[in-house]
Image (cartoon, rainbow, N blue to C red):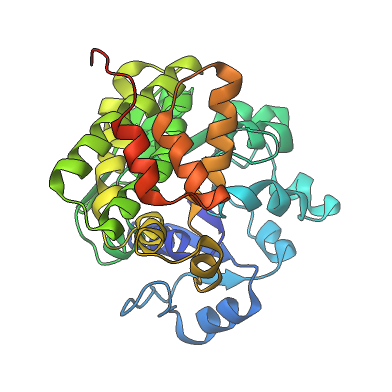
Length: 339
């Protein structure tokens, strides 16, 4: 199978390594000339995946023409969520029919986690708007507790792939799975997407809590009530409640909210420790998806009439410079109610 990966960030490269080790032909498209040069010269990117050497069979390109000539059967989209639509629209029109050959491309798998800021679309909705109609039933999402740094080092990892065609999902399970990477499948695409997106907001809150110096009691409460918010929004959008007790829900939430690998937790920690959001983000080489997603999720919740008090306070801290301690106080002193 020929697999193209659009986006050579840490997760895109970790998946490239995984799939090459699974005997797939892999080509990675990367837009940043400096990253691309490093990949072509050394088959590594120490800034994103320290001490990881990528298999020699992986091909790298910055050309959509070369990617089109590769004629992929599986396309993986690994660009940050807020850049997904622009990346797809950046493909030259004369190449789109070839690249999105509906006879050749068996599946399009998105691995970014977020809600688009302007449209409030999930990533699958962005893909439906930008891809040929014949590919819509082949749109899938891969999500779950899966830090790129660990997958690239072959640390046992379990994720879920979601879509609407069960036979396709079974085939994709076999494409991705191996002795250190196990893939479950789900038909709840929207639930898997919402779990992956909103957990980044709660992970920012977890970082803020850690930066303030609060303890295990606080983080336990946050993760529990944060999961309630994730489920509320997901169900309002048509998701199944049980999805949020799975890998893309509580599994991804626990991992992202507690791990030192987590960019969202890092941003929250620095804010809790007293730094300003703009300074933290300006110093980062990678994208913390939760920053933009906080604004998207808050607006989506308001449109759907869903109560999300943690999300509201994170938004106030990020976008209105609210004192994090005041935000915690307001959460703790809300009207008492049954659980």
